[in-house]
Image (cartoon, rainbow, N blue to C red):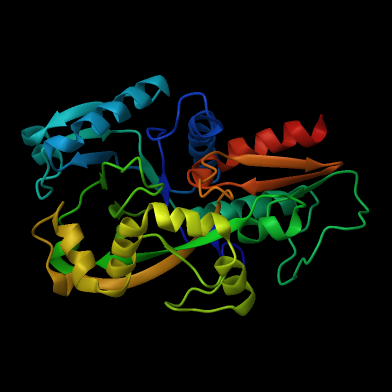
Amino acid sequence: QLGLHQSGRNSGVVHAGVYYAPGSLKAQLCREGRAALRDFAEEHDIPYTVRGKVIVATSPSELPRLDDLKQRADANGVQGARELDADELRELEPHVAGFRALHVPESAVIDFKAVLAALADDVRARGGEVLLGRQVERVDELAADRVVVCAGLQADRLAHTEHRIVPFRGDYFVLRGRSAGLIRTLVYPVPDPAFPFLGVHFTRRHDEAVWAGPNAVPSLARERYRRFAFDARDARELAGSRGLWRLARRYWRTGALELWRDIVKRAAVHEMQRYVPDIDPDDVAFGPCGIRAQVVGRDGTLVDDFLLEREGNVLHVVNAPSPAATASLAIGARIADAILA
């Protein structure tokens, strides 16, 4: 099936471009991709719902980081981003507790599985084939002038590259009953610049379901989605990753908390209640999960930008972390320019 892995397992958020370093591929292609995705959705009758996002500071200590995000938003051309005081935040999200917030009105949600289906239909309409249920073990002898390999979680196994993928599992919780009605928009924490992920956040999705999450813990299986799933090859490579061990030594406290919240629902609910105090623990249920493909360098640093590598007439997409879904059509245009040059 289409969308069994990363593309069909994300929260469905269309990012506006707040978080990314000005001048980076992420910043540029997120903005280009958001506009292209909005037009694609209109052309193919796919619902595209502008929700808006609030990035919430819960204490004065987070204000410098919130100010930095506002500067990035302005530098990246995000329209209408503005800071809200506590009263303005309550007008927008009455049940969210915050000291101050950054409102990003352009943020939206979409069903990326519907996007995938429409893209596949376009391929077929132009005479192409979409082949499913086939395992690609290597790219060797080619009967094509140009090949693009976008292997996601398996990218490092098909590309002759020094880079290595570390899979991070992200589990979501689903809010039900009265608690689901406490969230109107998208509610995000102020990200910690010392840790590469955005933290637990709330998403009112395209189908009106409300998800909280995801967390980020190393996964012992790249493509198995049950908690504690295990694959011998994946686990062996993970255990042998020098970059992961160095990353773990640097962020062991944060990592331990992520793992604790992954296992203990009460701990996850406590973190949610920092932002939405009225959440009822009985309304919180374990939800779906996804696994992110993230390149980690040998020195323990994460490759934070999109990374393309070329081998003759083969172009590999080696690293495409968030906001890759938002930027996907712009990434595709960049790939086309590179492979046709």
